[in-house]
Length: 387
Ligand SMILES: Cc1cc2nc3c(=O)[nH]c(=O)nc-3n(C[C@H](O)[C@H](O)[C@H](O)COP(=O)(O)OP(=O)(O)OC[C@H]3O[C@@H](n4cnc5c(N)ncnc54)[C@H](O)[C@@H]3O)c2cc1C
Image 1 (cartoon, rainbow, N blue to C red):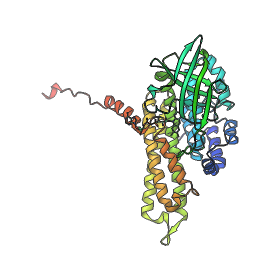
Image 2 (spheres, helix red, strand yellow):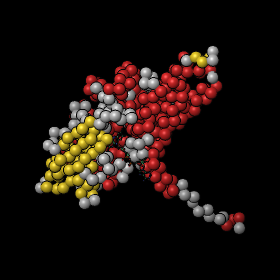
Image 3 (spheres, protein in one colour):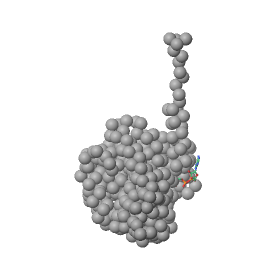
Image 4 (cartoon, rainbow, N blue to C red):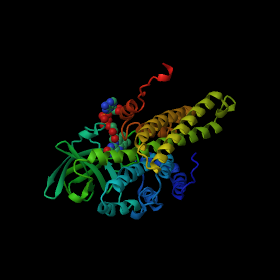
């Protein structure tokens, strides 16, 4: 646990998660929908805008506290936490950093209050990991841009009002905010997903959507290098905490079950091999949490090292969430394979984290590139004193 005192917004997130999200997360999963009233309460409590600057109606929370808040919501319900990731981290934080003063004034107050929801539209039917190869196109027309193409897997895309869209023109990628009310934009909800079922995923089509030049984020042609990479940094930080959240929920469930279930005349918790399963899971959880806290502290200090540490944290916690939830299913036995208990859902949710925001293989590429530079042994100079 962190030694930081808990911010009231984090305490509010914890209460909301315990009272509302955790008891209903299975229902949201089965009905493939986090209902509007739940999203409304998230906004009412100031949780949707917690990380956004105060001057635009946000909570002005520091990044470490925001990570803790994300984990509280994620412990309650992954599909609800996914809105924080796309709306607040991928789009909100990016606009706060990269948007012009006019753009911030135009969108952030509505986003902070939850009056308008935002989503992040990068992936396409044929383009995922190779994000710089997006086929969605834009062309300049007078003082405007015309966007054509298709996006896929867009979390909260089915109900979002604002779309941060990445499109290419002659090999250069630019980023735009597209409003749902713009003619030519249409969305089609996706169903039948392994997990993240409540998170309103959608395919999005752009059919000659005319976007004013005021909606271009950053400079033309810098859409991926600056805007996209900035967004992915914030998104990976959020997803890293999502891994901690799922692992912690799974540990709590397995401990509770092991304390109550009896086999061979003893509680499960009294069997040494079950104790071993619990110990391994808890150790992984603590390691993952420590890593995320470190990234949060680096972010609080404005240290650029946070970028690579966020990649590492996302890579590690998505893996350990998978391992811990697998252990939880084992502790639950048959009941672990049944949706009357939460661990089968946690297990499914953990898998998503190894794929989104740069899959584990993409993180391995980024981490190894960094390692090959950073962990190079310096040439040892012979000391003349010993010659
Ligand atoms: C639940 C969910 C929510 C999502 N939400 C969003 C969203 O809000 N916005 C958005 O833009 N996208 C979203 N995505 C899409 C997600 O970002 C992509 O699925 C992800 O980037 C992987 O791309 P892909 O599925 O096309 O897989 P591919 O890129 O086709 O990769 C397939 C496999 O090959 C591996 N691979 C690919 N390239 C390499 C390589 N060079 N070396 C080694 N291995 C490689 C990958 O790791 C993966 O295992 C979401 C996806 C899911 C499942």
